[in-house]
Image 1 (tube, rainbow, N blue to C red):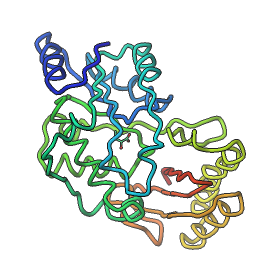
Image 2: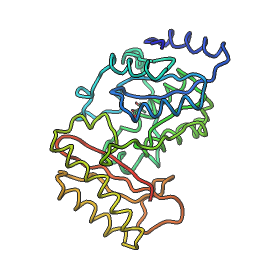
Image 3: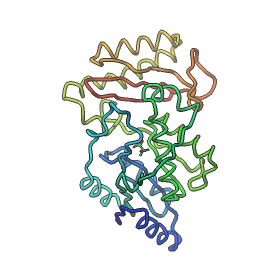
Image 4: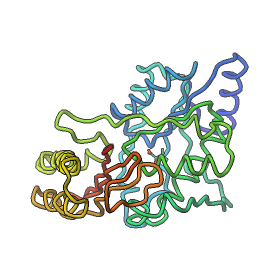
Length: 283
Ligand code: PAF
């Protein structure tokens, strides 16, 4: 695996791959890699001849009181994992390389970015859209892969690619990969490591409450009452607060008060201890 830390090195490495006639898939990450990220890498390897992974903890997507400083940084371990997976290229820029002095541009996607995590984390999706657009322009992959755990993020990135007429990758080649879960159902996340032993045990209530809610909806329970029961379940199980628990159209992310016709998603964000966990499931 070749590791590159400047845009110049990256360009040379990508040009070499392209000159050899290889197609390229990109897996953008913030590091602290786990099985969820590795599942993206494995899927990327089925899509393209070569795989690039980016590791960049993007300050622009963290709010002033969020965990930018505490966010785990483990470049040596991450790099070893990627070597073991047979990744071709690791793009690991510094903050100054990504946002040089004088940097002044921001991408803001309206609509899909506004509710859910967008409402709870102002500016977060502008930071995500901006850095992902930069990563796409830097690497120019044929495919890019993202975890479905960040369902709203995926919708924002697709909207950005569609609206800005991106071609590398095109919106059709931005692929979502299903969430990888622990044995008790908790979705893998780099933030799970913030949880104490007790919080980790209690956190299993999140996927359980969501599965219960989906079963209740399918059995005919009203949406409002089901979401209220879900919140009560989480608070009773040890969660401190629930940022949102919503049933939404899976594509537009518009909240639904009754069951819709098309694909629907149950999306939840809840806090336990100092940690904010998110999850979503198809309904
Ligand atoms: O999902 C993430 O890890 C980040 O939001 C991403 C897409 C790498 C952008 O910084």
